[in-house]
Image (cartoon, rainbow, N blue to C red; front, side, top):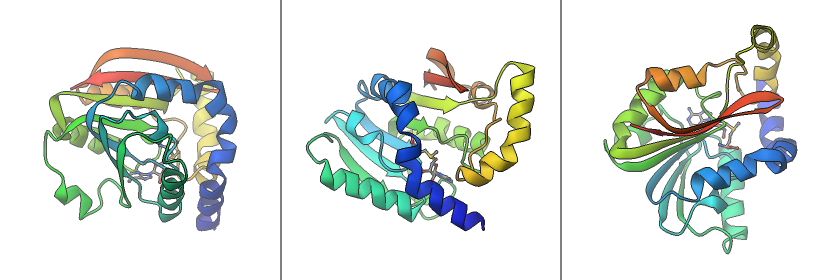
Length: 208
Ligand SMILES: C[S@@+](CC[C@H](N)C(=O)[O-])C[C@H]1O[C@@H](n2cnc3c(N)ncnc32)[C@H](O)[C@@H]1O
């Protein structure tokens, strides 16, 4: 049953996300990604929504475990070749999956990009400690994520809704204190914006 919901979620992802994308996500993606240069690691690149925002000086490794989503991203890449300037290598693998994890080198990346993904990956705290090692000393962690609500009533609602949301939304968790996890991992905010669009979001750049 879960497989059916996951497949539906993956097939409808771009359609379901079109309103928040138009409302604020696209402009935040552009703001965060336009200025990146060098070796970039994108975690859970999904359907490739971030690809048009990377400049030609970027060499992007886009990690995506879902064959369906990686396939959609490749299609987008080939169909919109003109609007995609960066060199992009889509790797069909997830964090924590060999052999990808074994093949990386520490201090290899100028930036690691997580957009709407730390809510879904199984062990975000472990992932963040890996990111610290994988980033170069002057590297940046780029974050666009929905987070746990500060308001106690909204927070309780997130916990109550989470089981249903998690089933319908491809394993996404509404209530993760992602901003706290990032702080605890030792990243320092360079710029941090708090936004509200139905859910609370952070749009941020962190240094190692
Ligand atoms: C909500 S989608 C976000 C997609 C895209 N980053 C965006 O901004 O629209 C969550 C993504 O996390 C990916 N994901 C799930 N588990 C993962 C893992 N262990 N490692 C990397 N990505 C993972 C999913 O396949 C999916 O593409």
